[in-house]
Amino acid sequence: MKRAKLLIIPLILSSSLQAKLENITLDDAKEILRSQNLEIKTSQIDIDTALQDTKTATAKHFGKLDFVQDFARSNDAGNVFGFKLSSREANFGDFGADEFMNNMGACQGGDMGACADLYTKAPDNLNYPGYRNYFQSKLQYEIPLFTGFMISSYEGVLRGVAKIRSLESSKVQSQKLYELKKSFYDMKLLKESQKNLNIIYSNIKTLENMTSEMINEGYAKRVDLLEVKAKKGNVKRLLDQMDLNEKLLYQYLSFLLNEEVASIKLPAENAKIPTATTSDALQNSLDIQMIDEAVALNRQLIDASKASYYPMVGAFAQISSADEKFLKNLDDHKSYTIGARASWNLFNGGADSAAVQKAKLELLKRKTEADLARSGIELQFSKITTEIESYNKEIASLKEELALADEIYENYETRYKEKLVSMSDVIIKQSEQIQKILQLQQRTNERNERVFALEQLLNGDRQ
Image 1 (cartoon, rainbow, N blue to C red):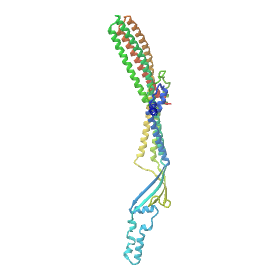
Image 2 (cartoon, helix red, strand yellow):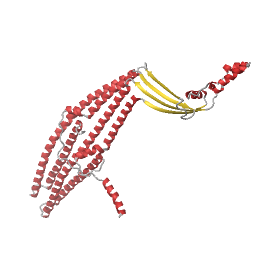
Image 3 (cartoon, helix red, strand yellow):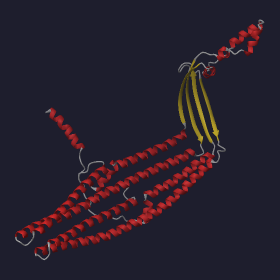
Image 4 (cartoon, rainbow, N blue to C red):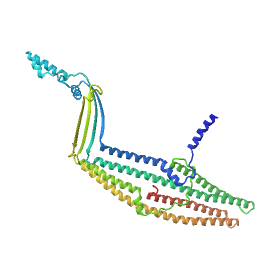
């Protein structure tokens, strides 16, 4: 029993992990999309990355504090004397004082050679020292006091980049919502077309049975039955194709939601046309918002390029301790240094001026692109609304034509029973009926696509 229970538990867990989404509404799907779609997640990571870049620029205001630990071993005369001096252990013996005093004594005793060596002979202790270890522990702090507004300008640039990343993420979300809604309404149209074709398929089977009976009674020919079967096969092929399209739609929905979708709840109504004006499109367009942010970003870049016209001022402070052994006599051998530095580039061949002019030209380009984008949005808004209006009229006409095609087919079916028309005439009218169904589906699909494109243009589903 225990072993059976242990086998059942993983099965339950695996079945719960493989649970599929069933009968979900469009609103439910939108929420899942926002939280689970991989492209949206990636775009949000880009936002976080840009925000971290902004924090990096802000950190420059506070300077930097470094701890440096040096270790060296040398018998170079300059290094050894410098090591001793840094650790406050240099003495006169390092200058060869013992040799000097010996020569002085010999000179006073009448040794003229010693007198000559007194100031000219190089001391061995100073020039040929033995190996010496050197450990220096150093804490140093540097801070910029004035950078010609460069840091604050780059802060503004990076904040602008983060804002653009946020708008790009919103655009990705808007695109995915567009694809999601279109998939739901494509499914609605597909189901309606399947329903209409199934009715036709049922009518064909009825016609097939009726033709078989009429052949048996001598009122119809075998070729009539062959025509009916051929038409039935054609409609069955269309129905099979629609079944495959349904599977593809569910696969695409599963991709969008990053979770397997088993079934959805179809929208009750057709896609509604959003009420808006051209000014609404200009105000809400993500493309316009992004290019406006790019214009602001270029203004910050001009300020950053002008930083080279100003002096740079910074301050520093340092505390250190050095010895022949690691961390020995830290307090005894400590030292400090504080200071400031100002630098001002006075001439670099006009490169600074060229950089400023380039930034101004980039700003002019961005402003021109903004004007072009606004004109493009106005044109796109007018084009989409005109196309929707045209599709609405065509759909209304196709619905009337379909209703007429249905009546004509029923009339021809009745007349065939009365031997007033041939089976070919009936099949032709049925083909016209099917054609109207497919045309209506196609035009309604195109109309919905334009409605969702208008919503996307207005940024109406980002909230």
